Amino acid sequence: MGGNKDRKAGAKDAKAGKRDGEKAGAKDAKAGKKTGAKAGKKEARSARKRARAGVDPAVLIAEARADAFTDEAPERAFAHFRPLAERVPAADLPIFTGQPLLMRANVRTALDALAPHLPAAVSALREPRLKEVFELPALVMALDFSAARVPVATLSAGEIDKMLAEGAPWRELMLSYLEVASHPLLGLLPRERVAAVRAGSGKLDKARDFVALPGLFAEFSGALAGKHPFPADQIDLLATLGGALVQQVRPGNAAAAVPKRTGESILRDRIAALVAERYDHLQVLAAVALGKRKADELLPALRAAVALGSNGAAAAPEDAPAEAPVGAPAEMTDG
Image (cartoon, rainbow, N blue to C red; front, side, top):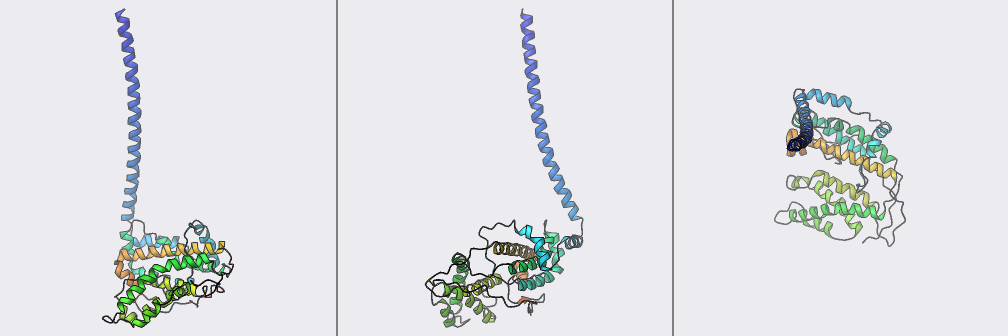
C-alpha cells in the first residue's frame, strides 16, 4: 500500500521535473537565440566598420560619384527625382521663391571648394551620404524644370501670411541689431537709414523691410563684416521672401479671389526641400573636414546672390537670369 503511494509520488515528481526542465530549456534557448541575434548584429556592424576602415576614402568617393545620378538635362532630372520628392511630407512645406539657376551656380562653387577636403570628411563620418551630395546639380535642374511647370498665379492670402511670418523674426532681430550698430557711439551705418526701415506698418511695409534690410547689410558690408551674427543664407532668404512679396502685396481694401495651391507648386516645393536638405549635408561635410567657421567662409549660401569662389573672391553666377515675376499683384489689405 505504502509502496504504491511512494511510486505515484515519484512519478508525479518526475513529471513535474520534466516539465520544469522543458520550460527552463525553452527559456534558455530563447535567451540564447536573442543573445546570438544581438551578437550577430554587433559582429555585422563591426565587420562593416572594419571594412570601411580598410577602404581608401578616395575609393569610396569614386564609387559614390559613379553611383550618383548626374544627368542635368532638366526633364530627365525631374523624371528621376520626382518619385523621391513625392514622398516628402507636404505639411508645413515652405513656399519656394528662389532662382534655381542661381542655386545651381552656388552648388557648383560649393562642390568645387569642398572637393580637396572630401577625404578628411569621409574618414571622420560613418555615413557621409556622398551620393546625395554629388547629385545636387542634377537635383537643382529638376527643381528648375518643376518650377517652370507651376502655372503663373498670385499667392493666396494664407500663403502671403505664411511668408510674412517666416521672415518676421529675422526682420525684428536684424532691425534691432542695426539700431545698435547705427548708434552714434558706434556709427557703423547712418542712423536715419535704419530708422526709415523701422518706420511704417502693415504687410506691404514689412515686405519692403525684407528687401531693405539685406540691402543695408550689402551696402555697409565693409563696416559690418565680422561684427554681426546673421548667417548669409538667412539674409538671402529674407531678401528672396521680400522680392516675392512686394510683387504680390499692395494697398487695397479687398482681397482678390486667387486659386488654391496647385499640385505642381507643391511638387516644386518638395524638390526645393530636398535641395535644401542635401545642401545642408554638403555643409556638414565641410564643417567636419574644416571646422564650422572655415566651412562658412568657404561655401556660399545656397540662395546667395553672389557666389564665392574657392579662393574667396566674388564670382558672378553663370546662367542666372533675373527672376521672372511671380504673377500679377494680389489685392491685399495693407494692415
